[in-house]
Image 1 (spheres, rainbow, N blue to C red):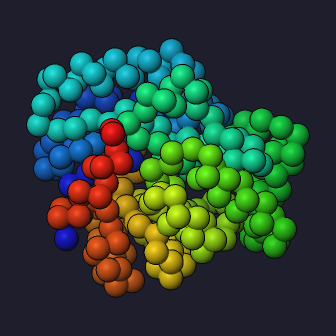
Image 2: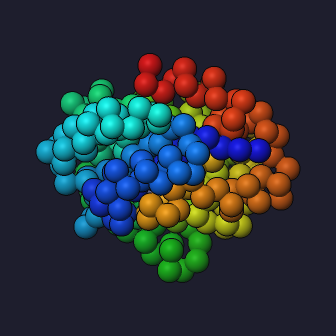
Image 3: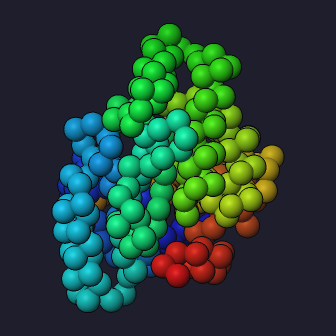
Length: 254
Ligand SMILES: [Zn+2]
Ligand SMILES: [Zn+2]
């Protein structure tokens, strides 16, 4: 089992430690063929990409690096946030149509776009302290994230079930229909086992990513590999394993 594409890495454009070039070099030395630069969307308080000008700087930096490092495919992407109850994400339309890869993560500490979203986010915050969301909160969260999958060309949902309580089975059913993968995130260990088990009862595809916030963690899939072994995940379900790549390449950058 060998992953040759790390679609989810962070740089100094959000709260990663390295530059885009640092991540690219790390990916090359880890033997990867593809790397996604996917910093947090601008809706994230304090750490999100700072608007369209920053997106444009990232884009031109990536274009320059493509010439310098022809042995690796560098994808201009984002880890977008859900900012409203109807699944709206925090990526301007002018950027959205130029992205090579779109990841969506449901995060806390995100600027809500409506009063209803503000209320939902506050409830999620409180649920985090009290150690459990009620059924109605879980329903609203599931509706928001599934709406995003239906509205946008989402390549993958990052760390489903982390931070925010959702019905992962329902999300995975929708993802299977729309060709969106669910992530096996290599930064959270056993925390995500329950969610991945729910995904396995559907036809949805999975993708292994590092979610590296430092260059040294780019291409580090140790946790994900042990999760795959532990849960006995069929290899053909994972789109970025060497040998399974044809599926993913058709969608990305096409
Ligand atoms: Zn995330
Ligand atoms: Zn991330």
